[in-house]
Length: 190
Image (cartoon, rainbow, N blue to C red; front, side, top):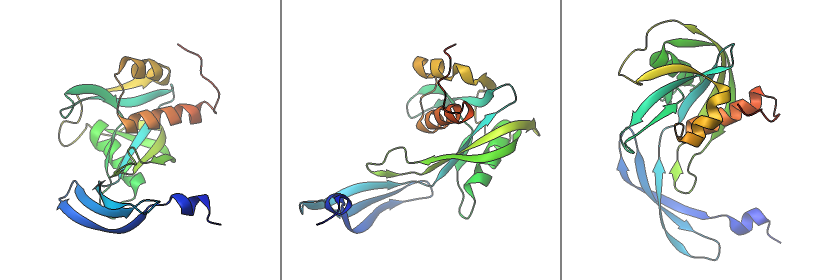
């Protein structure tokens, strides 16, 4: 008898690249689903991203207020960016925090790795939890944010409810960090 995994697994017969540049690769994947139907399915491949939930001694998280042109929408985000070829995601997260905010985390641990849209997009996100921070410089490079602020973790649920915090990486990272920092106990509403 076949296992449940064998009964439901899609078979990949190959992939044809139809667009490729530094930022995105788009392919058509020749797949066969259980039951024998075979067709081409779009697949979007993006580089891995790394970000950090950086929390200070006062239980505040370092956030950036940014405009995202694609949605013409503002929101609070965690510092982070794309993992360069050969770079460890942990190093990416530290580099991005320093470049975007000027802060350097004191302690770092892996928090969670996830895929934000598993149906047709491969875009692994690796989130780290940083504890304690030291201001080492002014943010460098392009303007990444209009505001950089330390926000109390207790305000995160209300920011989500207002729609001020809406991107998947920040949502997943912050919600998981709140659980980790609180030891899995429910937090009191503010």
